[in-house]
Amino acid sequence: MREVKAAIAGYGAICAAGRGVAALTSALEHNASCLRPDERFSGPRFQSNIVGAAPIDLDSDDPAYQLANIALRETITDVRKNIDEIAPERLGFILSTTKANIEALERLFDGRPCSAAARRHLQPDLLAADLAAEFGARGPVQTVSNACVSGLVAIFQGARLIQRGAADAVMIVGVDHLSAFVVGGFTSLKAIDPDGCQPFDQNRRGLSPGEAGAALILVRDDLAPKASVIVRGWGSSNDANHMTGPSRDGAGLALAIHAALQMAQLEASQVDYVNAHGTGTPYNDAMESAALRKVFGATIPPVSGLKGMLGHTLGAAGIVEVIACLIAMQKQFLPGTRRLQTVADGFPNS
Image (cartoon, rainbow, N blue to C red; front, side, top):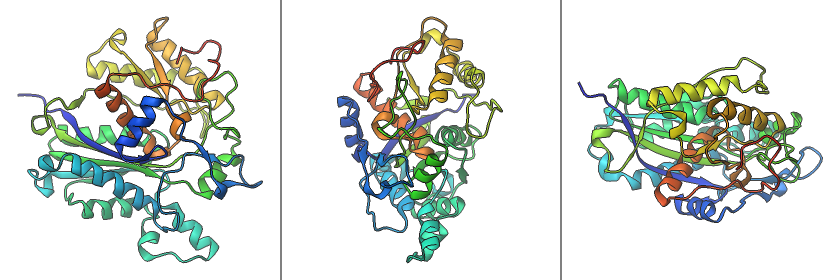
């Protein structure tokens, strides 16, 4: 019996680069930094006001829904003829987010107007349910909230649904929006670089918060458009080190990479490019470098990170960066690491 695989049939995004995949493509091709000062986050309460803000309605009380909706609409337009042939009961939906519509909580705390829909979308499962209903997905609906790795987990959860026959296609959307809650939270951890993040740089001092809505649709490979990218393997692990700090030796990440390679039936030497998490925080970047050395030895493939371009978009990060990799594959170029000036000692060249 033929093994069923999941293929990426289409995608859409809105992020600091702009609205739509075309804007993200342009930023990638020009290695442009889209981080900008934002007066909403000025003052002593925040470490920095340099963020990756997306072009959305700042008066909206439901920015999470807005970002997700925009990304999903572009995705559906991209693959309409494929989706129309799939019964709604065979179309799944997965939301990746860490905070959902945290704007509602801030408005309620401040005593500002907040609609019932916005309050409802403070709960990730209800945000997922409403998005699924709007886009006609009546199959399995899931929510993944697993910190920064949420988007990648959502993708392999979707692939599993297709592999085990629970769905013929799965819409996956990652979303998190900029808020005082998020920027203030990272400030309390002293995790923000005042001048904007510099992934893998000798002088890196922290991350830059960002926001995005990023969506893709997985389809059973025999239903996918020709030349669609197949999801061949994945891996996950938990280094059980600390609530916010990674294990210094990179062993957990190396374990996840090995698992992905094994599932995909690939050798490390066959990898042509690595998109790194690259937050710009001292410990994360050092941990990633250690993990890459464990996996690839002395011959590490080209590595780059996109947080200096888009900021850290939390639950959307894994999906928007997978989309960036798909664009790079289609256009046949390697993305750069924006804002990197001096590669830290012992780090792979980026």
